[in-house]
Image (cartoon, rainbow, N blue to C red; front, side):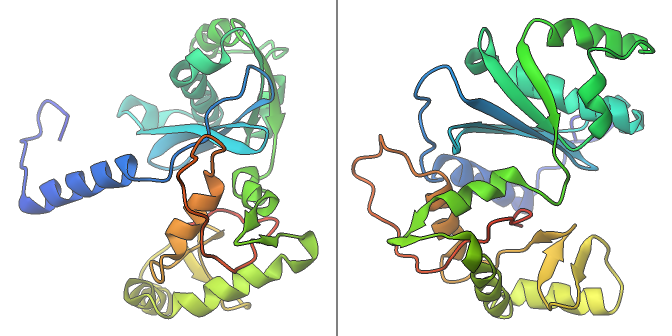
Length: 255
């Protein structure tokens, strides 16, 4: 609706969705405040419709941002889109990152050589000028190793310390809860009929989106996970979460 030739049609459904987004952004658990100027890590992500990034410090989430792909960006090659995600994260988080060292993780392995690559197009050369203004190390991490989700495994949930050896307990717990979410049950039926893509249910019976664990909207499970992921030492009045599940060490993300 933001394009020139598209008529703006704002329905009740649009208004409801807009207010829902506002509520989710303003009522989410408080993010951890930055403790200094070291230990910053940025995880960049690219999907078919947008760019995203998460800023972390010492294993805690500090900030996050995302935006939809612009019309001209949809025809970019994958390499340029992955680099665009890095550029977007540096621009949006510049007040944290300028003048300090930061490790930037990307799922595109070839970006590790962006500073030494000789055959660059004009767009890449322009972006390279911006990258050189920052003290960054571009590192690779595969999609199946989602380090942002990994921070959950470093926390204590309801007094239970998470250990690597118990990493499957959380997945089993979520799997049992998935059948209690009516919308997720309908999605499972669509998957069995092969009428939708991206969602899957493989041999282990766990419902996933693009390989990432889908967390059902039941029993305040999502709020419990978000609270633990964004716990802050500066949130003095915050009540401890009532959660007894164990987080998986290598969760691939949550839907």
